[in-house]
Image (cartoon, rainbow, N blue to C red):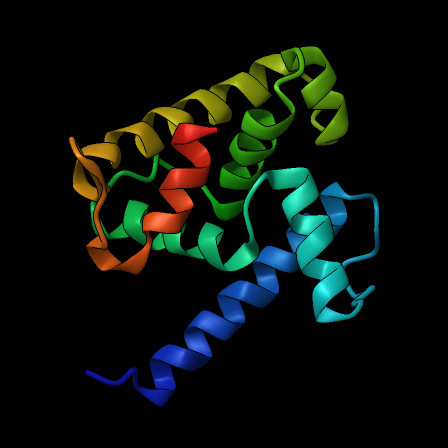
Length: 144
C-alpha cells in the first residue's frame, strides 16, 4: 500500500525535528542545514546509524508501545549516542548538555532496554528478517 500524502508530511516533519535535535547535540544551530550527504555523515558519526533508521526505530518503539513514559525522540538520540560513544554517564551528560548524570541515566537506559525488547520482533535466530523493512537498523545496533 502506497503511503498517503498526510503520512509522508508527518514523517518529513518528524525527520526535520530529529535533525534539529541532532544539530543541537552536535553543537550547531538547529537551522544550520548542510548538504544531505554532510548531514547524514555527521549524524551517523555521532549516533551510529542514519536519521531514517533512527526514525524507523522510533516508529517501531511507538507501534509496539515501548516508548518510556514521557520519553521523546531526543532521549532516543541520547541513547543512540551513548551506544555509539560508550563514554561514562558524566561525560555523556556533558556532551548532551544535561546538568545531572542521573537525568541522563534516567532516560538512556529505559530506551536501550526498549530497543533490546524489539530484537525478537525483527531478528530471527538465523539472522536478520526483513520485518517491517527495518532490519538494517538492528543489524547496526545489535551486532556492532
